[in-house]
Amino acid sequence: MVCGGFVCTKNGLCALNILYVMVSLLLVGVAAWGKWFGLVSSIRVVAGVIGVGIFLFMVAFVGLCGALKHHQVLLFFYMIILFIVFVVQFSVSCACLSLNKDQQNNLLEVGWNKSESTQMDVEKTLDCCGYSSFNPNGTCAARCFHSNPPVICNTCASIIQQYAGEVLRFVGGIGLFFSFTEIVGVWLAHKYRNIKDPRSNPGAFL
Image 1: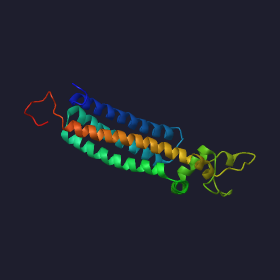
Image 2 (image 1 turned 180 degrees about the horizontal axis):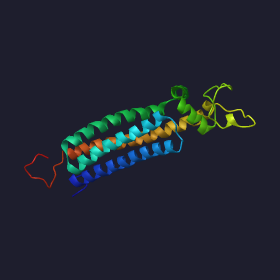
Image 3 (image 1 turned 60 degrees about the vertical axis):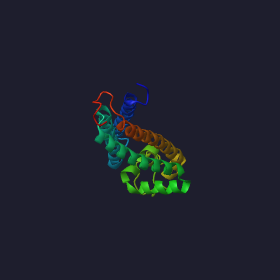
């Protein structure tokens, strides 16, 4: 069977979904590991990453079952869901790559103000206090704030902004890469649905 036929398309679709399963398990594992070792205390962040991992696992599972059984309905829903994910992920990736400095700062400040647990995680990890300003009479999870003798802590904005552009470019690049694998998955699923199984009854519908 030449590549591009039934078996080759089936194997390609199975391999792609096995990759998605591995990525989904990695996401869930990293989120659980970060929570277990206290690296991330924000329940929202952990739940969000685990939720994305579970969603990706379910989509990959549907695609894998559809590919193995040549199931028309599963392949159809897999193709539709994967295309929607592609559109969303491609849009977010392009947005990450196109943000300028002012937009990055505004986005970071909005994210900072949304969650106190995230603020504590950042202060603890980067050893800084506050975003753009800090009240010395307030509380801070950074080591510098509790040091003896006292040390003047840097604001977190001054540290985050040094790496924000690189992180956004990295995230955007990874998202863009996976968005193209998703459109490949849509193409493979569409092609596979319309290829007749050579082992089936010659008079059967696909």
